[in-house]
Image (spheres, rainbow, N blue to C red):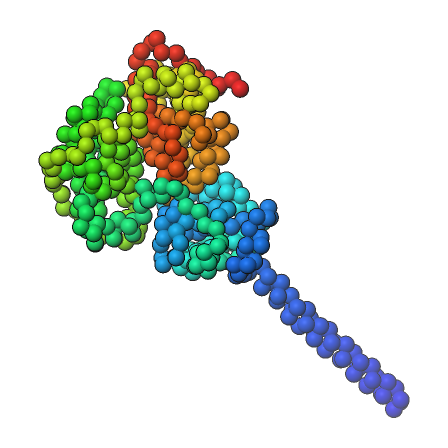
Length: 454
């Protein structure tokens, strides 16, 4: 009996040890799994590590700052402006945009930029916030190999390559406009204009940038063709608004398209320093700067300072458009309208009856209708990545080495794209002002419809 009890006691102790070991084993397994969870979290990366992986196909480097910083502006104390050479852009500000198809647009942006979950994704910023916001967004989408990086580390090392658009200064951030107002352009003449159609200016009256004056686009163009005004009338427009060739002119709007229209005409006239607020009034209001509701009156001037036009090749007319079409090897007339307008399914305008395109023109993309340019704008209405624009064009032979003249229905959409092309540093560029409206008015002008044959 005693032996049996001893055996049972030993057996009990053995079983208890096994149970404790099993429990201990579970705890050990849990502690070993913790690093796996850590590996899934966002990690940091050094300049050396980033440089060694920069050109690898399974890595993508993403600038999460505002688009202006990517374009070339030195913001948030960064020593050099522009982006890390080879980086794509996906701004944290895009995540805060109020748009009904926001998710669809963000997904499309990820795809266009090659930001996919099978890659190692490096997200960089200068404020320690933007990269984290984008990392959280991507984590929710199942991305696991995420890294953050402080671009200050890269920008402070001169031999590490950074890129900017050649004429990035033409597109300005809200911070630059705010500084312009505060320091009064260092004593040099400047004007800020809200550009939109009509004298009523409802958006201007709701609130505008301090000191801004309203420009009605009827001040620079007239129907029925809706070409720019004749040169003497344009000079009068400049004098009415106190604009000279040496005035720094900043243009913006709730929709930026009219601002680009006026900007291009001013450059044609000879104004040397023409700027457009990237992202329009929304960029200003989102930045939290002061908003004025006072109706600021125009201040007239007495002299423009040059014979209009001082830059005549920037805008061309029907005869030059025909010359471009005739030069099939070196020039392209680029259609900045929707596909349905280009192919002749619709005219796109209630006051243009004819459908189709000038024979020989090439589709350069636009948007779904004549009120938007989604193929050239980010979700926050800032300028889209220039490399993506060039890649989109290259498929149809629209390349920077050629003489490119952009047209649309009446010059608004094409003016915006011309301005972007200028920002990107393209040199042989112009606006065909009359566009489809003027071309279609003469039945002797050759017209095409349908998809072009390859």
